[in-house]
Length: 223
Image 1 (spheres, rainbow, N blue to C red):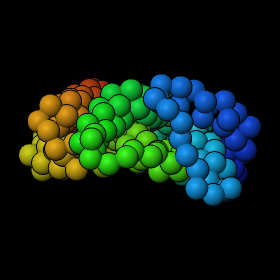
Image 2: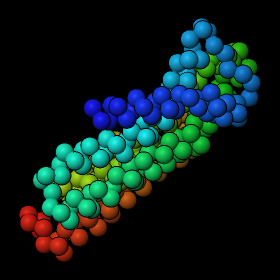
Image 3: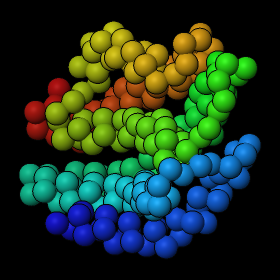
């Protein structure tokens, strides 16, 4: 309930600035976006506000999850896992920025070049922003991987050994995700795949660090 209320409050607050955010997002677009109905622009503003509300709500949801598992944690574990929560917002914002500044213009340029001299291009605001959000929001969520891995390692659900054993399968899934959301060219696949693989390796390294701290602290059940 707290998470839902936080999302709705953040959604209303972001909606007040949605018009300004819209202008900033389309400032680099060559031409004007079209609308096909009187409510199209309204839904675009709602989508924009929804992404910003999600960014605000993610730490709140993380805190609620932490409160749920808090009774089963020691005092040191409570303090350590609580510190992961601010990183959720930072990494989500980093993933959104990666998707918007790197992936989105790359994919859009490819699609423009493919359609050039063949069809008349007409971009509607609704389709344009749906396309943008579908490319950026998943990366915001994928960039949460290091913090989630650290949190689960601290709880004893994951450990670096399991993550290392699952490396081949994880790499395969990340490559499939990259190829699915990028244009069918080698450069685009590399530009998206490499950061995701690096994120996974960073997650393993962070898991090792958390695991070693648990070993040095003599946490029961860790060996």
